[in-house]
Image 1 (cartoon, rainbow, N blue to C red):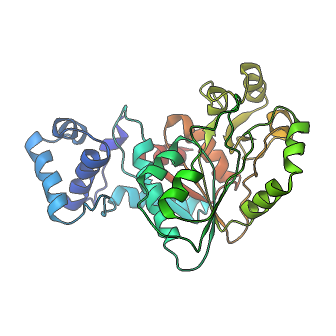
Image 2: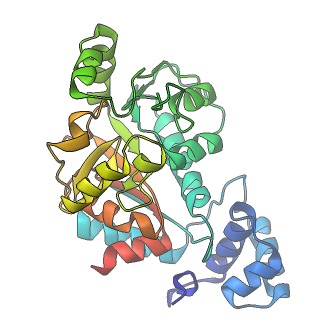
Image 3: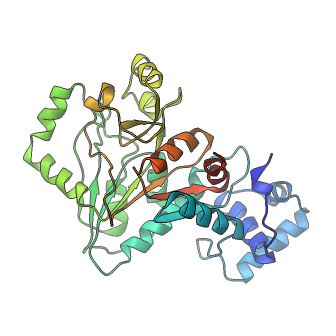
Length: 320
C-alpha cells in the first residue's frame, strides 16, 4: 500500500498544492514524478506547484501544514503523551526521508532559538541532525548555549563526519561546548579516565541541564549506525541483538521497552545518557522503516517526549 497517497476526507485544494510543492521544492521531484506520486496529470501537478507559490506558501520553506500530517501529530501526542510532535509530508516511496524531516527539524530549532529567554540546547549527532544543520538560517543567538551530548571522535581518531554542534554554532553564532570524546570508548577504564577530566565534567553537567535536546535514533538491526561507523564489532552487535537490543541514542543501547542495558557496549558509552526530566524537552528526529521499532521503544520508555518524523513512519508507529 502506498501510504503517501492516503488522504483525509477533509483535505483541501491547498493541501494538494502544499503536498505538490513539498515534493517539488524539498524532494527535488520532477512534475512527472509528482503527477505519478499523487495520481494526477502532469498539467495538474504543474498548476498545484504554481498555486503554492501564488498563495505565498513558499518562502524557502513550506508554510502550509497538511491536514493528514496535523491529524497524525495530534494522534501521536494524544496516544503517547508527547510534548511536541511534527510530521513531515512523505517524499514518496523509495526516497530517503532524511531531507524532509531535516527541514522540519531545522524549523523547530529555529523556533526555539528565536526565544528571547536564554536556553541550553543539547545536541546528539547523526545523519538527520547534520542535514538539519545545513537547513538552518543564519541567526544571532549569543544569549543561548549549545552543548554536545556525546563525543565527536571516530574509532580511527578522526573527527566524526556526523558531528553537528560546530555546524549549528557557525549558523546561529551561539556559544558552544563540544565534547572531545569518542562516542564509545575502547574500555570502561578509558571512559572513566575521560570523565575524570574537569573540562569534560563541566560539559556533561551543562548537557544534563539542557532545556531542550535534539537527538537522532539508531536502529540495532544489521544496518546499525554503530556498526557502520565502526563503534561496534559484528560480534558485539549480534550479542546485543540476542539480548533484545532495539535502538540506540547517543551510543546508549536500549530494548523494546525503552530500558537502557547495564552491560556490554553501554559500559563504554562515553556521552551523556538522555533521560528527560519534567519540564525539559527531548526530541527524536528520525524516519524510515528501519527506525520504527527504535522510535516506538524510545517513546514508550520515556527516553524522548518529542518526535519529528514523516507520514509513513508516523503511521507505522501508530499501527501497534
